[in-house]
Image (cartoon, rainbow, N blue to C red; front, side, top):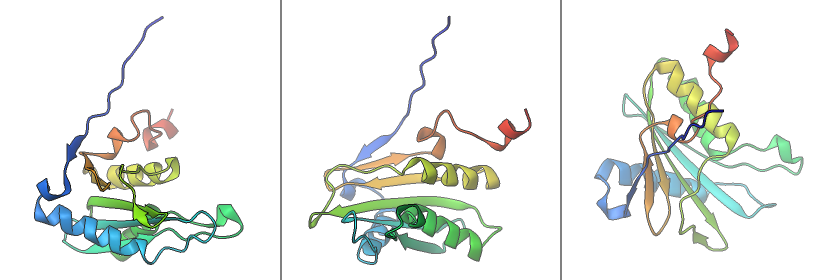
Length: 160
């Protein structure tokens, strides 16, 4: 038997330590929280995607009483960006969440489905996507999606 250790590397910043462009992207994600439709969970999420051309697309979670029919903020923002600019790589994504009258103190991470969608965009353009996960205490910054999904399913897996 062999054992292998897989590590995730991330940087932890206070919000005001981030460069201005990253702060602005987080602000865009936070603005989207107000547009979320979350009557069932009360958990409001906003995401903002920045493309290599400087365009920014944002989205919020949209719940549905038939639970699988809703969609997460990250996927809404990513699909919107890719639909508008299918040939432009994603540079970064910021994610923020709000519940019980406050933004979360600890950063949240994307669900598994969102991680896979983010990974597909990263592989599609062969460019890392910087991930900014907002919390009021600090912000996690990850260099790429594989830091969130180290044992990932990729198109190479389909080829056997």
